[in-house]
Image 1 (cartoon, rainbow, N blue to C red):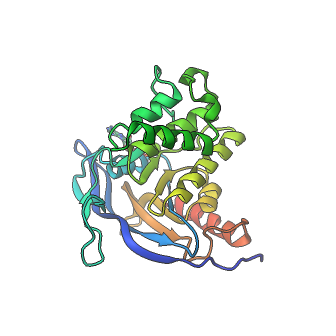
Image 2: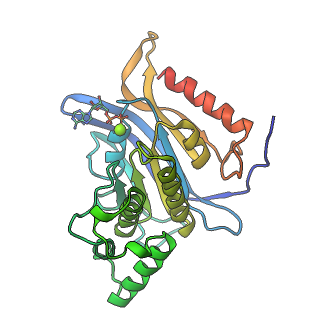
Image 3: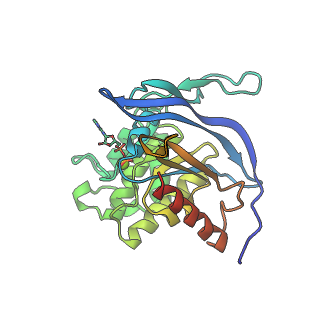
Length: 286
Ligand SMILES: Nc1ncnc2c1ncn2[C@@H]1O[C@H](COP(=O)(O)OP(=O)(O)O)[C@@H](O)[C@H]1O
Ligand SMILES: [Mg+2]
């Protein structure tokens, strides 16, 4: 079987800590006992963020979990912590804070944009809370438009954008308006192969532009998750003690693809395929 050498990396401070999280809608508990922790991953001579995928069958609570991770939904129990970058590091640790709406960018499947704003003005609006000067904002936007292949549609309104341009603008808008974190709910659903490549490229650009940048996404495409992510969580129903499948979503399995030697590989190997198969088997039972 074809294998490749695992990539070297180090783990630094905690960048996301979810503790005993549950979310209910009314009386109904949707997700429960969610615990996960991700650290800042550092690779030698590389600027590299984190890409975390969430897989699971429909209705298991992925979107609900994302709403809690972005602070849009209040936990019934537990908490979601991210580093508080406004506070100084003490004892080598960045103080943590509970996530609040606006800390984490959220991109929905429809790539909603302001109808009456051009691409440039959308991005300018996204930077409104920063302390950058007018000129710095302009320089930043110009640079991003160039890096993301959007220079030519700078003055376009959303209705005149192609699907790919629209996605990139929506992702960029969230990237500029929030911190280093971004949640994308099923960003690959319903896209043609060209636009899938566009979103993959956008992921790469985000991932390589800051060490703390963290992309969390859900998908039904297991191969794509194994190809792109360095960490995968499966959201599903746990088997109860009586052998019955439960009806509350939780994390039923975590794959650390860095540890497995599957992250950041040039090629999709037999080991990746084995992982895909394992994920499928777990999803079918949860
Ligand atoms: N706003 C809501 N009010 C009540 N129930 C909801 C709401 N949103 C989602 N649900 C229910 O929560 C469960 C999980 O949904 P969701 O988080 O969208 O799962 P997934 O994204 O994994 O498909 C589903 O049974 C869904 O019907
Ligand atoms: Mg969903």
